[in-house]
Image (cartoon, rainbow over all chains, first blue to last red; front, side, top):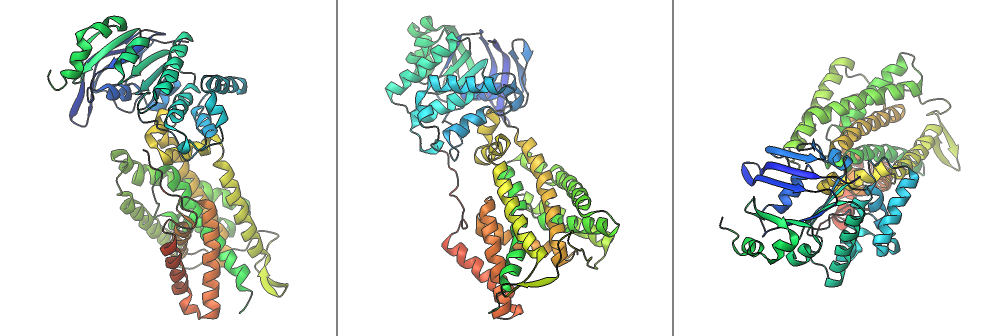
Length: 241
Length: 291
């Protein structure tokens, strides 16, 4: 069920502007791997390349050994890699229930399997069950983030990539979201976490990579990185490098 | 004033609504406004009229025309729309390319069929022969057309409640977010072009018993359909139905109270008045904005 994600010497750019250069990451199955670095380091670009919104110009992206680089996004979703983009990209005109239903688009689960997904999401985020009929656009920021994660969970991801899930949320909601991420790891989901609250991210992560100016500046077990200068330098030293 | 204008206005308005729905089917997942829609309607009318003249039953002619025109719509997506949208989803070059596609259809149809209108009888058991009911003159085909249009639009709205229909709405709202949920917008675009063009062909056949199948059908229905779509709120099918009926009634009223020469002017005046008060149309929603 769970899957390993390896990114090997990947180059990604927008048009002729290179953003990522020779980036390599190894994300073990069933681990939380944090991706930290200052704004513009290329974290979101990397996630967009893995989910197929951007095509790497070089390198390989291996999901349990199969190269998925350059696949269409819907195929990558089918393969079990789900990306919760920054900014709570929901379908605001549609209800909470309809957004979750859309999460099942293309799913081959039978009715019982689909019901089980709803049950899981409502168990992780009970507020979504209460607000099932509400339009997604009227939810609070925290509820929208829960819905965005819930929508991705409907497809039973093997790898879940979260881009800034805590952005703009109240501390108590951040706790709740991070708690859910830890529970998902316990269930075997591989997690890639991009997070600007670096300390919080390193608390729950097993391993971490530091991105700086489109390259991997360092990596190591999260607990070690939390006390090293590497992370601090990545933020202070942005622009050099 | 003559009450006959009510059924005749509603019947004509139903056709405008159907053309508008054809626009909407394509517009929803692609954000492309297909300027060839009127010519697809006309082409559907010509193909099915010829098929019926050759002895094919109505329903078979309808299906054949819908399938053929559907493929021509698919080709339009492939040749005139997809290459542009692929380069930049914000490009509006499809205005020119779909217009060009419409001119090509128009010219080809002119060569193949010539300028003479073809008469098409309504399908059994309906007829365009008028009769009086409660002091109003109408025909069984007029009434059937009005009822059928209402039912079809209800049916289409039901489709948008299914998972595939929701996916279409999702693509309209946020293309990238839809991609990340495993929805393939290109596939939905292809289906929409096929179905939108097939729907146009059906509209053409339905228009033929009252308007004749001719090359003139394209331009006139394009403008009226566009008016109905704009007044109803682009993308909104129920709005298109109400707007189509209002336009049909206004046209019939303008023709009977004023003079036939004022028909077009009176509907345009009404259209402008509605859009001045409601710039997004009667049922238009404010555009989705991500915060």
